[in-house]
Length: 186
Image (tube, rainbow, N blue to C red; front, side, top):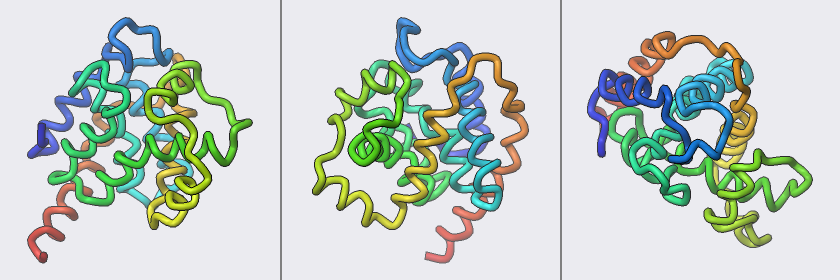
């Protein structure tokens, strides 16, 4: 699925309310809607000028809704869905949030994961080897992907008020418009 408008993306994000990362709700303690809002809000707080990173946090897990049960491929599905609308950087950050988890598991094994993230880490390839970690660290987006991953891990708090989805419409429109202008220049 390729999203063609902010309205389509907003509809998909609204559909995340009551949708979970696992079909049987055995995964993370918040639905995909609350998780998206919390992740984006954490990124807004830590990197207020980086709208693309914030938007990547908002949309990073929509692949769970697009293809339920595909833990290993959810980041790729989400990245493919948002690329033409939100741009290559947002899509790459979304795609890299899973390798960033594998990277952090390799370089900071003492760092805790939620029980669901620990379970899916195995399905996603486990901790990176030293060679994989070194290659990941050389990616120009590695630092941003790790920042996204850390917000992803922290954005799973039941009952936390992270605002409302409608607050993100303007930011999504801004990122989409910028991407559209860049595409017209190419």
